[in-house]
Length: 435
Image (tube, rainbow, N blue to C red; front, side, top):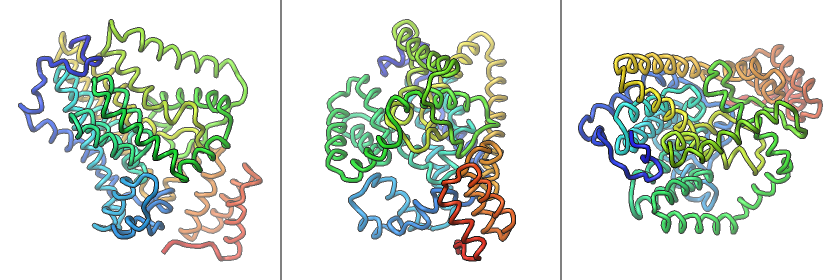
């Protein structure tokens, strides 16, 4: 593999016609995604799905969507409206999410197959497609914001000219973090189109009362200094999610850090060291540098300066996951040059392990009880988890257990108004139930 593959984004190496020669390879990716996510199709709506989709009239059809415009993330909401028009069932939304994920994996294959050896390209796409950490962006319907945005980002890298710029703009209209795609686009010497899109996005954001409100809320959440310290721990936590499938959590409630400690210093040093290593290797080992810097590039908008109400979520790793997947594939590709059969077996075993982990993780989304039981089992300090578990228990007519869950939420956070209200309504027999 050429060491100048990724800085130029143009090198064509032996095997770059892989997809054109073998059209069955994308079908293989679609098939493995289908197997790994088969049990995701029966999952229910969860958490923000109710507020953002099910109970939100603005996405209940194309006319309703149009009447709600202008607004933030218009293309994301359009995708929900189209989905609702076809069918309002959870199955319809899950099918769309799985299809988007499969398309993203195929795009990664297509992009890499033009620039590197076929073994590494296919391995990267498979690892990206099957890793259990991706379930929060696929099985959790509202996670579509990151997967659909990634679809347009990858499309912008695959296309040329105005089509590339249009895909880039579309990615931003799905989720604002897509602005980071400007970096690889500009490195491909397509500076004018991305810069025009960025300027237009900045002007729209500055003129929008919704974005000004979101910025104000963000800055009131915590100070930038506190957020940087908090996010240093969060980024290392997210890095750990890549290898600790057993602790994947929909609502981890990471701590807010306000003072330095030995652990925080070590975590900050690890992050800074990896980023410095990435830049240091840019000329000598650009393929390795690409994998490192791609990962941190996509965590930058969500896990750095601007505070968020939720410190970190697994879905923030979605497009960033392509970096670590590439690094593993690159190493296995080097092994394949000497011991191809052994490397192929390793890839197969790894894919089975990841697909099994994804299948198991999808079970958590089966219904709201399994979803929130998993949250509180892994984050017993999370009052929101216990409040939402209490609500799910109440919906299942398990009132005594719901009462205990609400009381646990209040013991963790005595000022948690929603848990207090839910407890009172439960005891009065007036807790609202979804029909």
